Image (cartoon, rainbow, N blue to C red; front, side, top):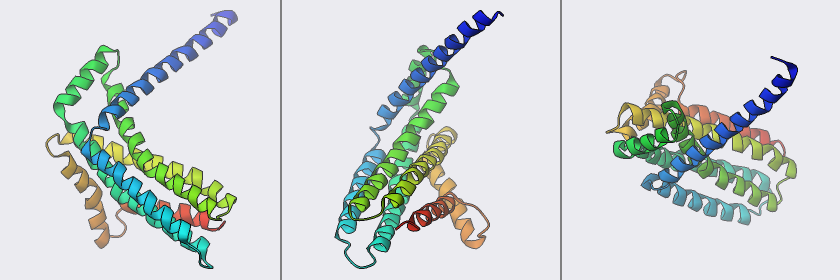
Length: 234
């Protein structure tokens, strides 16, 4: 291959990659739109809104001398509710939606007709769920950081927490969406029960054997570390 042909091949390869990514983003958006119909996801969205309103009011009225610590405590409590109530509702709704065989077959057939293989369909369905869950957790959390900033928290505190919480929400959403997809694939009739067993089973065992890792334990420890890093700037 001559140098000139190599120069021409590189833009062509990049253009093909951009086209592929654009197509996959469109497929993810399509699956995500379909998942919005789930009752669990609608309930999770409503609860997330309620969590934001409740803790935004609490942060706004915090006036004592230790206001920074109080705001830190409110934010931690809000993130706990968002993770384990909103996240649970969204995960159960996602698992149920992914397990609906008739809809799954129709979506897969349409995606295959448009040139997507099975791996791309599986990946898009999982990422659609991950993005939905991540937004339900991340958006209220970041808005609460904005409320706290308006109430006198330092800019350095916000600059530390904003990217940390965005990464936390993305990681949480991806892990839970993968478990939801796995549960739907393995047990189409009882995906929510299997998902609950996968999450709660290790947690119950960890009460007796603390060395056993569990999803709630891992993300609770991660959240504590992230908030502790921000607390240094309150």
